[in-house]
Length: 235
Ligand SMILES: C[S@@+](CC[C@H](N)C(=O)[O-])C[C@H]1O[C@@H](n2cnc3c(N)ncnc32)[C@H](O)[C@@H]1O
Image 1 (cartoon, rainbow, N blue to C red):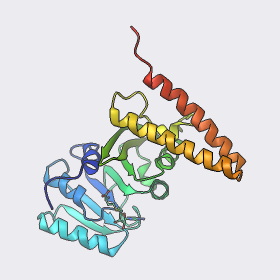
Image 2: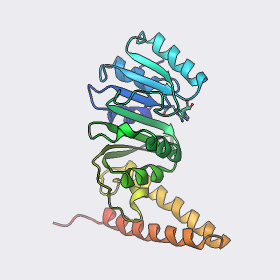
Image 3: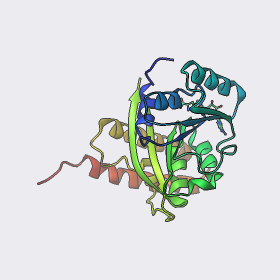
Image 4: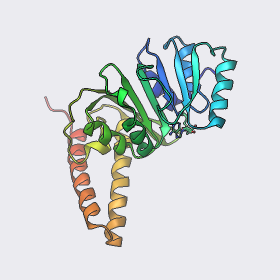
């Protein structure tokens, strides 16, 4: 393994709090925990995967880095096989948002204000944000990045116990509006295109009026926010 993570995993790594023990859920080759421990950001880590094959990959990477004493590889469906409170920062990277939301819902110990949840959904980021909003978490930080024309979002959240009020567009935009960052603006604009494409397909099929109406409300809200985002600052 080279010392360099790809830009997506580098962004995920930058969300980890120095000094925290991490649990990397769906670790596959364990590149992320190895880099975090090897660089001294984390004193130790759990590299977890659902399947034996990826876990073997993880074991090999960890052993080759000489970090078997500091990184525990765990065969686990989500956090199921981990002890409660074993980690400070819990990472879900490279999985779909629907799966991430489901794994979050099964791990009660994440509902602790000291724990940071870091998510990098490959799709359906809205399902992750919605789950967080409705289950007493607040999103502290969010960033976008592009690698070879593919956009990614990373977010960090912690438990407050209070539901977050949200407008129709917020699950789709998160906290990316208002950022002076070309990657965030590009990702938001792609998100809007996707929403419109889905709305148009539903309208053409005339199959689901309720979902069509919901998407129309999301798009109206999204466009209004985008207008503010792109408005020039006035003094
Ligand atoms: C595409 S890889 C992502 C690897 C790495 N996290 C990254 O971001 O590059 C997704 C991994 O998640 C694992 N996975 C899928 N469902 C899982 C679950 N329920 N619990 C734990 N791991 C799971 C898969 O076996 C696979 O190794």
